[in-house]
Length: 518
Image (cartoon, rainbow, N blue to C red):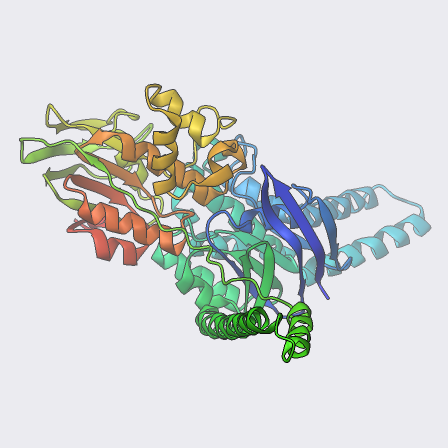
C-alpha cells in the first residue's frame, strides 16, 4: 500500500469538503481525480502534501516511497537560471560528486597508505553509485524533458525571474519529472501546455514506472494516461477502475441503479404508509397495520439522488459600437527587452471571434498584454477604434486583495450595487451559498476563475480579450462559457490551449507560428 487515507473530514466557511472520506493507492495505480469546481480536488492534494491540515482523519504514506508534488504557486529563486534550477533535482548526486572530488584531491598529497586505501575504496563506491544513478547522463535527461515540455525555446541560461507564470509552472514540472518520485502528484499539469507538449506528457506518463495522482479537467488527457478514476462528490471519494471513458460508463450505470433503488424504495414506503393510514383504526386490520409500521421503521431510507452540477448562466454586457473596423495592427513588434517575433500585422472587424494560436512561449500572452496597454511595443503600432471598450481576462489568478470575499470584491468595483443583485450575478457564474462570502484566497482555481468571469460580465464592453479562460474550469463551466461567448454580439480575441474550445468558438484563427515560417 503506497498511501492510505481514512475518515478524512474537513469543513471551512460552513461548507463540508470531506465527510469521513477514505481511499487507498495501490501499486501500479495511475489515478485521475475528478469532480466539479469547488468539491475539494486541489484541497485534497494540499492535504496529502502537508500544506493544509484536515479537521480529522489519518494519512499514511509508505515510508519507503518518495513523493513529488507539482505546486503551481510555489515560490522559486528568480535569480537562478533554468538550467541551475533543474539541476537541483540531482543535488544529492552533485554532493556525492563533490565529496568524491575532495577525496581525489586529498589523495594527491596523502602518504598514509591506510588513508589512501580508504579514500580509493570510498571514491570507487561513490563512482559506482553515480554511474548507477546515470549521473553522467544528467544533461541528456534535462535535454529530453525541456525539449518535450517546450522549455528549450526559452533558453536554459534564462533567469527564472524573466519567465511568465505559465512558463515557471512548466519549469517546476520539468524539475519534478527529473526527480522521478515513486508517487507523483500533479495538479492541472496541462494548463500551460499546448497540444504538442500535452502529447509528449501523455507518452511520458504512459511510460512512467512509478504511481501518480493527477487532478485535471482535461478529459482526453485523463483518458489517455489513467487506469483508475477517483471521484470527489458530496464529501466522499469513490474509486472506479479504468480510464475516464470507462469511469463515465460505470458512473452512469451506478447512478441509474441508485435512482432505480431509490424510486422502488419510495414506492414501497408510500404503499406502507397508505396501508397503515387506512387500516390502523380498523379492528380487523390493526395487527397487519402494526406489522407494516414495524417494517417501515426498519427500512434504511436512501437519500434522494443529488446533483453537484452547477450550470453557468453567463451573459456578457455588450456595448454597441458603430465602427466595423475595431482594431488595426501595423508591423507590431512585441517583447520585453527585445522583439520576440517578426512584425505582426492584422485587422479585426466587429463580431469576429479571433483565436490567437501558436506553441507555448511563442508570445501569445505578450501580444494580448501589449494590446491592452500593459506592455509597450518594441516597434510598430496598433489602434483600437476610439469608442472601443475592452474587458480583459488574464490567465493568472491575480486579485489586489485576496482576503476579500467575492461579494466584497464586486462591491469594491460597483459600490452602488446591492447585495442581492451582486449575489444574483455571482450565482449566474456558479458562485453560490457560502462561496460568495468566503475569502477569495480560500477558493479553488475554478471558483476564482468564475469570480473573474463575473467581473467581466458586469463590464460594458464591445471587445473581450481572454487569455486561457478555460483554465481550471470544469466541463459544465466550459460549456456555459462557450455558449455565452457564441451569443456575445461583440468581438472576442482569445488564447486557449484547448483545441476543441478554439474550434467551436473561433470564426477566425491567427497562428503566430506562421510568422516564423515566412
